[in-house]
Image 1: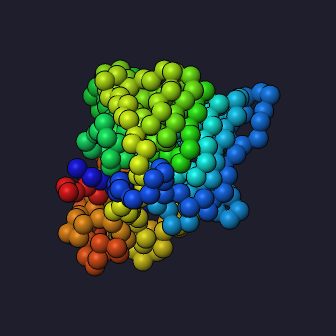
Image 2: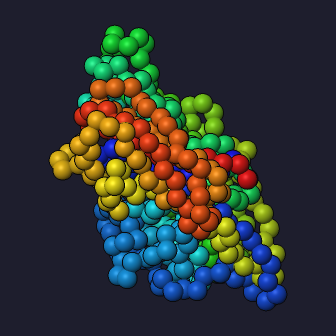
Length: 392
């Protein structure tokens, strides 16, 4: 089961979650080649004597990284020094799993953090009832109920789970927020659900050394999200650090896979039985993305264009303002999703129940398709999401 999710709002649109497929093909050369062209140069962060965190955002680089949004990066080397945490969240990287391909060495002495975020706390005001943010390629958690309005808690997003092959590369599921005991008599606004951990393929033509931490853990919540996936691929993998796709309170782990000719990693690997350590043949293996990235986004509501980078916040001015009590049209644009798929639109209104409706089936081509859906929009602020799901 594959799915693509985009947070939207009526008045507020949040980003897209999507699925990327990764395949492997054999080549005839005698040295390992992960497929990196090296065109993105070296990814290196300055050393620090005290703990510091950097949020990885490809748009802030000059020139910007990953302009086509497929989640594939072509580095020469990667270096994360001790005391340095590199935090990767789904919105900044386009909601896709990450493929970091490197011609040279990867050294992680600090922390590479792809964790899902926690759900909003119980008692949070309605404006803070938003889905928790996942790691790259993971899925958001649901929001909690609202006492004053009787709004129920929402299920998290995502379907199915990853696998020990880490192909396709997939992050963890989000989980549900707290629902009311009885409408109007809950003790407080409910807690949100945790988001899923991210998904990363980290590949090098030479060596990967982890003396720090690579983490793709679940986000805490009323119900925890699930951890994501970490796949390391290089002729030599070493270090005494930690690889973490640990268990949530429901007992679910993520997936960790190490593929090396010389597997010298002596650190901690936390993924329960979802761990595979595979001998990589010294003959050439080229890792290339196949299948592209599934994407869907809301482009217009009632003819009004939705911003390319919407805020998703209950603040003025809204991302989109609707001045009619009549039925309005929602226009969705997609790519990489099979034709005939219907996109489900969720509207979460500040005074009414959560409303859901489907668009017509996607039409056009797999590379570029469109669909529309119609309904009346409740008064007041609304936050929404679009979600596509299909079998393949």
